[in-house]
Image 1 (cartoon, rainbow, N blue to C red):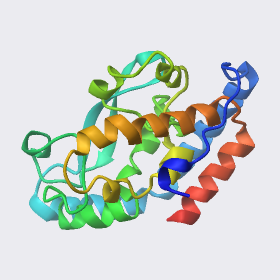
Image 2: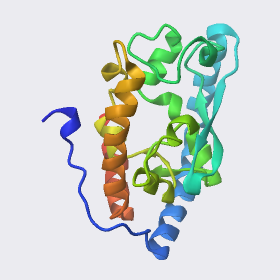
Image 3: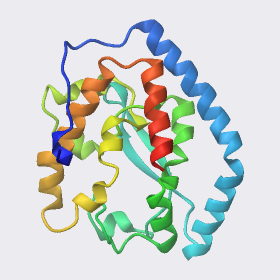
Image 4: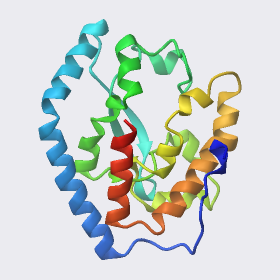
Length: 214
C-alpha cells in the first residue's frame, strides 16, 4: 500500500458531543501541564543547545489557523537558521540547508514540537488533532476541507503518523504543487474521518502510537 492509499473512512458530518469535547479538554489540560513540568529539564537542555548553535532565539513562533478559523501563534524550538522564512518557502524538504545541525536532531525525534504543550494548555491546540496549517494554505481549502476547522488542531494525528516522513516525500522539485495537490488533501481526508468518530480512548491510542514511533 502506497503512502497515498491510507483509508480515509467516511460517515456523516457531526461535531463531537459536548461531554466528549469536555472530557478531551480536561485530559489536554492535565496532560500538557504534567508534560511541561516533567519535561522542563529537557526543555532547558534543548534551549541551551539551540542558543549555543548560533546565539539566536531559542523559540520559533509562527501564525497558524485554529478552531473556527481563529489565528494563533504556534511555539516550536527553533530548528532552522535565523531568517529561514525569508530565505526559503514555507515547506521543509529533505536536506534543507536552512536546518541547523541541532535542528536536524530535534526534527528527527520531533523534539522541536514539544513547546506546543503550551499551546495545548492554553487551548489553542489539543494533544490529538490535525496539524495546524499556514493561513495561506487554509485559504485554499475547499468547502468540504474546511470541516477540519470545526475541530481544535493538535500535536499528533493519524495523518501525522502516516506522513511522519513528509520531508522525504517533498524532496525534489515542485514541492508546493505536490503538497497542495496531493499530500495536504490526503492528510485532511484522513484526519476529518478520524475526528468525526474520535473518543478519549482512540486519542490515547494515537498518543501511544506517536510515542512508540519515536
